[in-house]
Each structure stands twice: as structure tokens, then as C-alpha cells.
Length: 310
Image 1 (cartoon, helix red, strand yellow):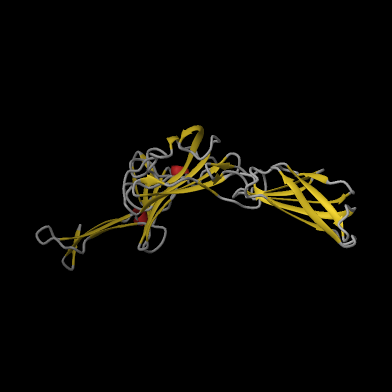
Image 2 (cartoon, rainbow, N blue to C red):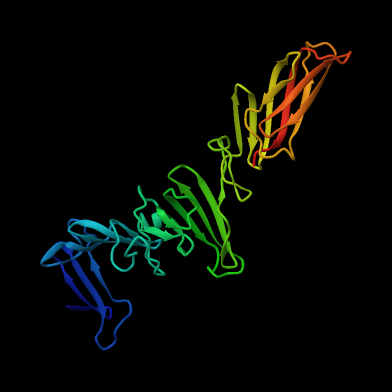
């Protein structure tokens, strides 16, 4: 040990591995330091006698690397910390549904970023309060249908908030999508999304609320028909009336005659004709044709019926 300009210096010269510079014992100095060789991941500058490839080294200026078994696992710089490998312990979530504040999420937590959700199946959509992607079964309570599927849940405020508190969006195994919101502690009714996949199909009503497709279209030997989700139905047929009255049986029956209207016109190839309709029923109507003299006549006729199917 020697005294150089007020500092004690201890230097191990072999390999220039270690240099210690510190102040006098009587007057400790804040400028003392331990100088190490840069080292490497294979041979850290600071290691252990029984584990010489575990420790720290200096890859470049301002950088400290921590290595374990010659593998760099952590690097600190003036910009922050870089971690190589996986984190574990209580700093990360302990399960895929761990909601502990301050913990880091893993891939797959709350159904995020995983190939297959791997999260618990919800038993009741009404009581679920955790944001994320979730599975639900055919038996799950308060789902929009009996088909299993995936739930996307997002909280906006407290679950008991008087404002919009939560949003749920469901995609079923049948490919249907439903959405609802929670306000004033009450869930709204499920609303089905419509697109090119389900806009056309079989219409249906339950308690006056549409539960099927938006438009249903079809044709048979009695003509063409359109049914709309609000219960409106339109039927159409072009045919020829003989001298005798002709009964048009609608391609689809109407629900009532009270709101049923039929328009019948002579075809363009006919001479002057008068088309009249007779007895009206939910399933058919009688159509007659007269010439200018008032006699029964033959004519091409176009008939359209408007009414309600539900």
C-alpha cells in the first residue's frame, strides 16, 4: 500500500484485474472507487470463487450486465433496465386472472395474446366484473343464447356507477355477435349485430322484438315474398285470369286481414281491363277481370299484397 497525493492505493498488478483507490482512514473520501477489468459474460469482472461465470461485467460505457452461468440476464443503462429471459416471482401475476395492483401481466393473462384463451369459464355474465377476454359455456347464465362463446368485457367506471359502467360484447360459437351495456347497476338487453352473414335469413319475433334475420326472401309456385324483421310482409305474383274468377293463394300466409291490402293491375299486353278483388283471407284472395263492356274477360294480372306476418 502506498500514499499518493493524499490517497491510499492498493493495486493487484497481475492481469490488471483489481485496483482499489480510497481516502485515508482518518479522512474518508467520497471519491474512492473499486476499479475492475471490463470482463465478459463468460468471465465476469466481479464473480464468485465457487461460481466464476456468474456475476457482473461492463459491455460498454455506462452499461452494467448481470450474467448467470455465462448468460446475460439483466442490463442496466442510463436509459433504464433491459431484461433477457422470463420474469417470475410476485412481481408478475400469479394466475391468468390475478388482479393484484402493480403486477406485470404475462402472455395469456385475461385472454390477451394467447393462442387459446386459457382463462376460467364464466358462470354468470351478469355478475362478471373483470375486464379482458373470457370463455363462457352453453350453460352460462344470462348469455344471449345457449351457444358457448367468447366474452369481451370492459369496465368504464365502478360496477355500481350511475353512469355507463361496463360494456360486454359476445361472439358465440355460431358466429353471432351481441352487445350490451351496464348503467345504474342494470344490464341492458342484448343487441345482435347484423352484417352480410346474417342480414338475410329467417325472420322471427318474440314479444314484438326481432330475434332473427332482418329480411327473409323466398319464392314458390304461388309467387315471391319478402318478410321484414318488423313483421311486414309483401307478396307478389304475375298470372293469367281466365273468364272465371281466380283465387290467388299467397306464397306465405299473413297474420291478419285487418291490415292486409292487395293491389291488382292488368298486364301490359291486355286490352282495357278492370281488375277487382273479392273475398280476402289471410292465405288467399279472389281476383276477377272485366272488359270495357263489363263482361268477364281474360287478362294478364300483376298482384301485390301488403300486410303483417307477425
